[in-house]
Every structure is written in structure tokens, then in C-alpha cells.
Amino acid sequence: MKFSLNSFVLGLIVTLVAINIAIFIKGIRLSDEIHYYEKELSALRQQNVEYEQKIYKMESYTLTASLAAELDYGKYNDPIYNEIPQYALNQ
Image 1 (tube, rainbow, N blue to C red):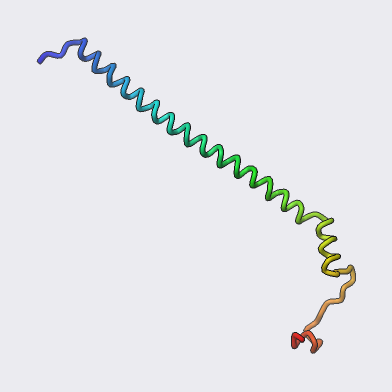
Image 2 (image 1 turned 60 degrees about the vertical axis):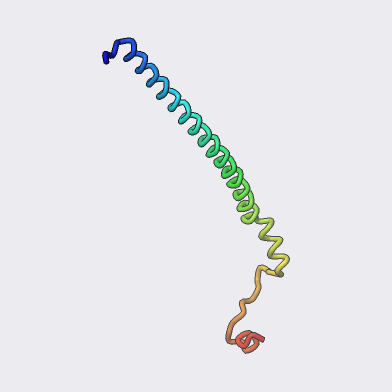
């Protein structure tokens, strides 16, 4: 069997086309993965913004003042010591 130049070139072209198709399919899969991770990243960014807003709300002076008012916490509350029998015995 003698291989001619035409059959060699035809085999080379078929091989290159197969490699091109494989690379194209791999690129599509990678594109899908990139799209998935972009969606995850945007969801994490949104969650981060929500957490930041919650933190800012918890650190605000107005919330702290309203909680202090609800708990009847004043500026000069006396501390409770364990030497007082009423508190030492948890009564």
C-alpha cells in the first residue's frame, strides 16, 4: 500500500477538524462554567451588600439608643454585686 500525498493531507485535515471540534466543545463547556460562577458571584455580592446593611443598622446609634430605652438602661445604672444576698442566691 502506497500512501499518496493527497491521502496524507486528507487525513491531516480530518484530524485538524476533529481537534477543532473538540476545542469548540470544550470552549462551550468552559463558557457554561464561567456563566455559572458569574451568577454565583453576583449572588454573593448581593448577599454581601445585605450583610453590610444589617451590620450598619446594628452599629447605628439610633438602634443602640432605642434598645437601651427598651431595656431601661440609663446613663448611671448601678452595678449588681454578688455580695448582696438577694442576687447571690438568685432570688
